[in-house]
Image 1: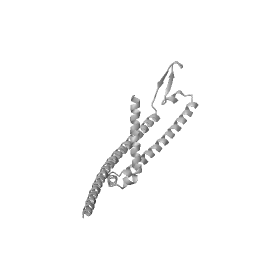
Image 2 (image 1 turned 45 degrees about the horizontal axis):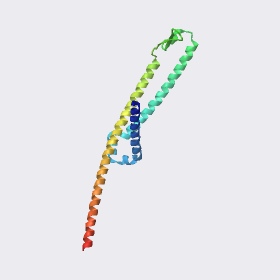
Image 3 (image 1 turned 180 degrees about the vertical axis):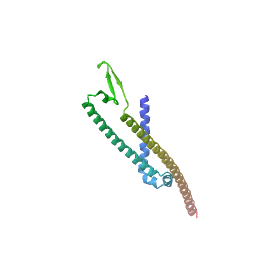
Image 4 (image 1 turned 180 degrees about the horizontal axis):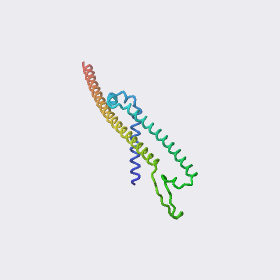
Length: 183
């Protein structure tokens, strides 16, 4: 039951986010022309920040990809050295498997290497950047939601005002036609 609740909740949130994104995409030009959006853009420089964070994420991904390639080449080079060497000290910085009974149990001794530390640092940096981008995006979504809500309320109020004005004019026209028929 909990699984259904979690998945159902996740599906609901995803669907709502997609709907909001779809509406924003459909009305992006109208939204960008609104005074509220322009004010927010001037105040927070939304477009510029989105572009900046997008570029930053893209560059970080490419850097991580390049670092992973370099690390893979280093490991490959080490493997060739290990194959060629008869010296036991070559495995000092790497994981060593100690066999007790080969078929029953194995004890693993892990020694952190520079590669693992760098990989962990890169992973942490990427997670931090992703969290920063996520937080910035959530802030912008909230700001846009508020702006859309305010504009929606303004439009509703204007529509009610127009409806009332039209009703008043219709009543005036009826009064005039009633007076003309009586004369």
